[in-house]
Length: 248
Picture 1: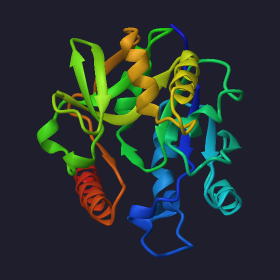
Picture 2: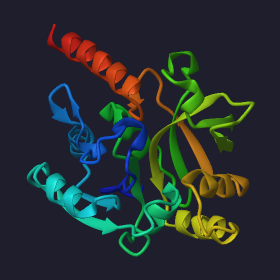
Picture 3: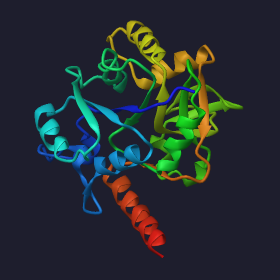
Picture 4: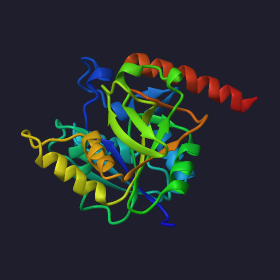
C-alpha cells in the first residue's frame, strides 16, 4: 500500500461569509476556543503521520503566509503555493499544486475540523488510482444541510456529488486522499468551462463517471465545516463538549 505522508490544504479564499465587513480578517486564523482554526487541522494531520503540508494561499497571501508560519509545529515540513486566480473556484486552487506534489496526497480545507480517526480511516483505505472521500452518512446530524456538499453512493462507489443534489445518501466531509490523476480531471473540467474555471466537485464528478471515486464512511467520527458565524458558534459548542468528555 502507498504510504501517504503529504497533504495539501486549500486556504486561498477570503471567507466572506464568516468575515462580514472586517477587511483584516483571515479565516484560517479565526479563534476557536482561543486557538486559530487552522491549528486544529495541523494537530490532526501530525497525529495521523503527515510529514509535509502544502498550503494553497491567495487572498492576502503575504499576511496569510507570515501568520501561518508562526503556527507550524516543529517537525512539519511546509510550503506555500500562491493561487493568483484565488477568486475562482476551489478546483483552481488545487490545480495550483499540480506541479508541487509527485505522489498521492491527503487533501483538506483550512476551515474544516475533524477527528484524527477520519484521516486514519482514509489513509488505510486508499487504493492507488482511486480518489477516496471521507463521507458522513449521519445526515440528521449535519448542522447546515443546505450548505453541505452532498454525495450519492452505490455501495462504496460515489456516483454523483453536488450541493444541490436531490437524491443523496451521504455528505462530503472535505477530507480526501487524491491520486495524481485528480489534476487531469480538474483540467478537463476547467477546459469545459467558458470561464476557464472549475470546482473540486466538478473534477470529482468527472472522475466518478469513470468509476474512480470511493466513499469511505467515517462512522461515528466527528467533523464540522466552519463557513458562517453560526457554524463557528456550533463548532465551539461541540468542541467544548468533546474536550469536557475527554477530561472526565
